[in-house]
Image 1: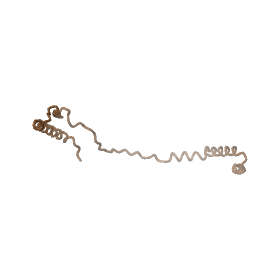
Image 2 (image 1 turned 120 degrees about the vertical axis):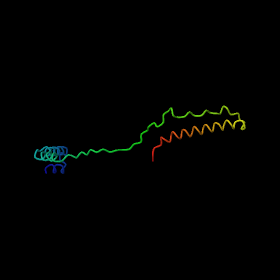
Image 3 (image 1 turned 120 degrees about the horizontal axis):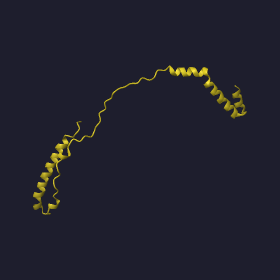
Length: 117
């Protein structure tokens, strides 16, 4: 009560504020108040620990084709072309056949690597 009067009148507000803090400290350190609070903390039950196993599917990169199984790319024919369509047609046709065969082999190899939907 006296602290309130000192603060209300403006008499030594710093001293009054320090006295209020001292009173607050005394109240918290009072064994009559502190002991029940400490004992109440021991009365609670600890949280239950739940152990469970969860399976999570993850996509993992796996090599599905050996490097030795990959077919070699057909040779380039740009240096063999003359610019004459009649002469270049057999060369281009043969190259196209080799390129298609190479592509089919590559697609067949990659077909085994496709993930199921």
